[in-house]
Amino acid sequence: MPKVVDHDARRREIIGVVWRLVAEEGIQSVTTRRIAEAAGFANGALLYYFPNKDAVLTAAFQHIFDSTNTRADKAEGDRHGLSGLRTLCLEIMPLDDERLTEARLAITFWQQALNSPEKAEMHAGFMNRWRVEMRALLAEATADGEIGELPSIDAVVDELLSMLMGLQILGVLSPREATPERQLGQLDEFFARLRR
Image (cartoon, rainbow, N blue to C red; front, side, top):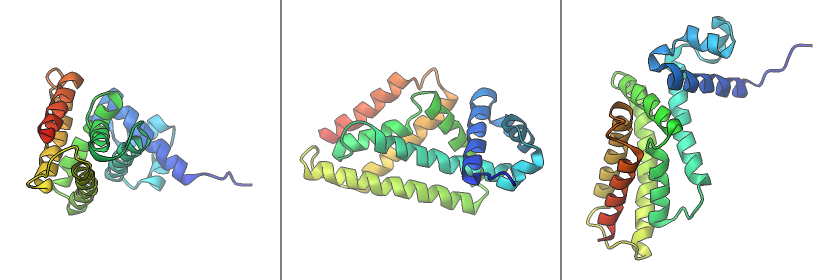
């Protein structure tokens, strides 16, 4: 009787291998041959799940977005108003090894998206989902009296997303300056300005 294989579990396993390779050996190590070797597959078997390296990295980027949202959903505290907004921000920021690895993968994906309309559209879709959530959380904060009326919620969301994406870049490329303490200080200052 043939062995039953859970293909979704196998895909998640491969994405996990990509994470480990990026964290331990750097993004340059992510080749289909190296992924297959680290996962214990023949190179041809890997191609059954992902046709090429690009497809694996795209799946890993989707995993980053999903993981960030899942962590924010499971975080302790209220996912409402400013508290909910802060929780989402903390899960995006590269404050520990897991989120720093996510930032490395995100930066690699952004580079690929420069020449791929499909990847650029995928990224825009993710950012739009965060924009919608951030707008809703800011509207809740305004309705609850946590902050005053904002001249433009969109401008605040744009500033916040720019800061968060910048922190991902700085966390990877300038870790001595973009320490978790300094990142948190920047976020605290942003929230203090909202409350003024």
